[in-house]
Image 1 (tube, one colour):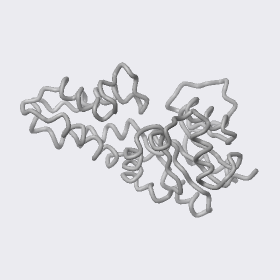
Image 2 (cartoon, helix red, strand yellow):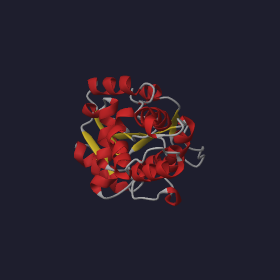
Image 3 (cartoon, helix red, strand yellow):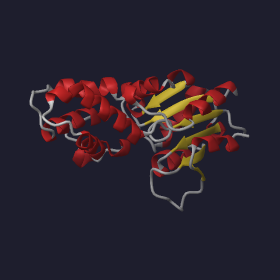
Length: 229
């Protein structure tokens, strides 16, 4: 069946997670530098990267239910502060500004504009908090391109569970076989979408090669056009 809908993962598909962390770290240091004994940008980035782990946090690094709160706690514990900063204020800072610091993946905006002009239905399917997904998409300027934005928090299930993909297709009003899913994670994105009956494209560069996957691979988003012709 012809493709009628294009579905995207968020982190390391539409947005470059590590570049977003760099920008956020720079903004955080700019805002809190007067509270710190030393302006150590590299250490701030190291702390956030360790906890965030590319958007796939490890349980042993999460001291709190969210990445944002865990990052705030670690920054308070590991940086040298000369003036006390409230934990809740630093946590709120993450949720308010991380999305605004999001860095788009190369070619993402041009791709979304082109797909919208060609009348494809567009959706995001992402694990994580819904408000954070919306903040990131708004920060990127991408939110209005999408007909449906689905988060694991919103629907109570996470990728790679096929049902989150099927739920999205149903909300778009298309059959799963008419959907093309693009993501960076070989299991959460690719296997999940395939098990839901969707076609899938693996955007490589963020996870190790998995030769067992029977799937087309791209290195840059602009390569996607060839699969929609």
